[in-house]
Amino acid sequence: MDTQDRDQKLPSQSSGVSSRALGGGTDDPQGGPARSLEYILLRWILDRPEVGLLIATVLLAGYLGLTSEYFLLQRNLINITQAVAFVGIAAPFATLILIGGGIDLTPITVFVIAGVVALKALDAAIPVPVVFILAVLAGGGVGLVNGLFIAFLRLNPFIVTLGTNFLFTGIAFVVTDGQAAAIINPTFTAMGTARVLGLPVVTITMLASFAVAFGILRFTRFGTHVYAVGADADSARLSGVDVTRVRIAMYVLGGLSAGVAGVLLTSTVGAVAAFTALSQADLLKILAAVIIGGTALTGGRGSVIGTLIGILLLGIIQNGLVLRNISSFYQPVVIGTVLLLAIVLDELRRRLADRV
Image 1: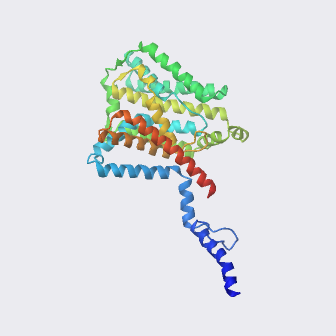
Image 2: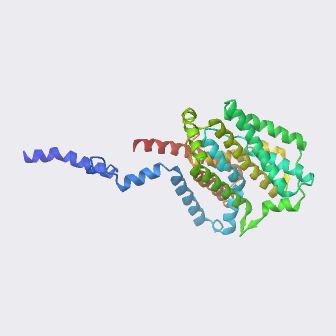
Image 3: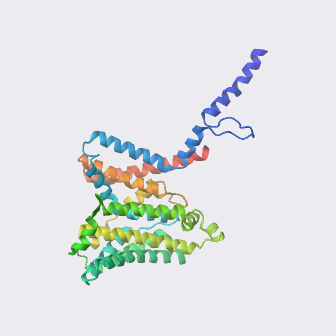
């Protein structure tokens, strides 16, 4: 009888051990389940997709550092940041737009529009600081057009920004006659190649762009409203959020950031060419970095920290292919594979988070 009683108790005891091993712990004195350290750590990781992405980025960088004598050189690391700086300046505000439930397909077109405005302003002998402001404001103007159509007419943001993408690309072709135009102004062209404390200005500007976007989303009421609108615009409106104003502001900020990137890109290259807007490779890099960073396409969820890590990951991949003398034709293949893998892993992470 005693043996039988012990056998009947064993399953419950074993079950208690399994529960603790899985993070369930034991009941606390108040009757609720105690959270073990393992459970808290697992939950923290599952709630932050950028953690896994950071680990993958560090592992890839470590592998390249061990297999290439050039990867960890200071010059090469700076080159990585320079290579992604222009898309990196626009990416944090593309993240903000996606968190707010929108999408923007015009950043690369804004690059060109800002360059065209700078070109014409310089031809009119306008001072370089004023040229910079005018070109950035032109980018903000494109964002304002997007925001007005989307917010007031409640049109699909994908369709609207696709249409304005073609519209402003066409305007750039008309203004430049479809020809590349060189900019001969040493003060303007020095802006994109300048360095501060050994760091390229474009790299510093990229980090500043991420810092500003992070501050807006984390510490301002507007940032809270962006998340609310992206999660459920109708509920946000009922809660007193001016959804129309939030949506317009999102796209204006996106246009301004892309305008800054466009001016610096034009300054660095020393020329502007409308046909570069037809190549959407950089747009795909921006969207890939945002999605890889964990921002939901449905809105309401995401972080600029994840996007920053995603941008750096894409830069490291591109640099690694170059160091290994692998054809650049493979770069879209690798980026596409990483993007698909990131989407699958993010879905698995969310499903696991719902079960834990």
